[in-house]
Structure formats: structure tokens, C-alpha cells
Amino acid sequence: MNNETGHEIADALGDLLKRTLRAGLYRALTEDLGEAVDEVTYPVLSGLARTGPRSAADLAADVGLDRSGVSRRASRLEAAGLVRREQDPTDRRAVLLTLTPRGARTVEIMRQRLASHIEASLDSWPPEEARSFAAHLRRFVDEGPFTEPVDPRWRQ
Image (spheres, rainbow, N blue to C red):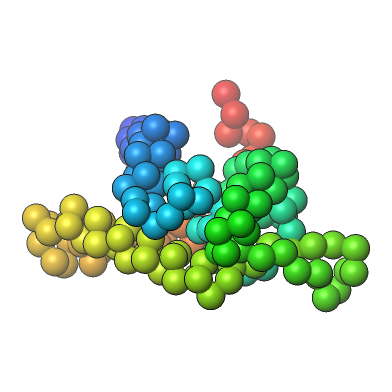
């Protein structure tokens, strides 16, 4: 593989990770799920679904927000009955954010919408190509450059 392939992948990832693209997708996934569920609170709900109960500080690192941003969003979600705060059983001073059953159902709806959106975008692909893409993407995520800290020698 040559450096061009790395540039192509980097450019595609850059396009995929654009904040405006994510915000639009999150808006579509959260439509009609309640006032507290929107593109701003989506990362907190989705993050808790992936990680399980977490402190605001720990979740912040996972979803790319600061602790106060997570706390503000969690307060909105808590008021809507989607998230609750509970004492950390391993540290009585710490508080964990956790999904309520209603919050878990809301996340399941969003995930189903996302899966349907992805499947619809792959409808024109031959089935084997779509399966291959899914397998290669999973491998790239599991084994690729984002699994370890960036080597300083790569910076130019």
C-alpha cells in the first residue's frame, strides 16, 4: 500500500467526521423522540449505551465533550426521565450517569434508525460488497491507527 491510500482514507474520514454532518445525522436520528432528545444530547445517550454507567468526567472523554457539557446534557435527559444519577458502588463520593429503561428504549430507536439509514445507503451495492465493507470497516476500527496513541514520528 502506498501513501496515497492513507491520504484517501484520511480524507474520507475527515468528511465523515465533520461536525455539521454529524449534527445533521443526529437531528434525523432524534426526530420526534421528545424535547430533551436532539443532536446536542445524542452523544450522551449514545455514549452511555456503549459504555454503561459512567461518571460525567469519564463519559466526557468518550464522547468528545467536557465534563460540564456532559453534566448539562445529562440534566436535560434526567428531567425527561431518560437518564438517572446514582451513587457509584465503588466510590461513595462519585456519581454515575446511567440510562433508565425509557432511555435505553430511546437509544434502541435511534440505533434502528441509523442501521436503516446505513442499509438504505448500501441498497445499490452488491450484497457481497456491502458485507465485505462492513467486515473491513470493523477490522480497521479494531486494528487500525486509532487503537493506540498517535506515534510522534507520524507528525509532520
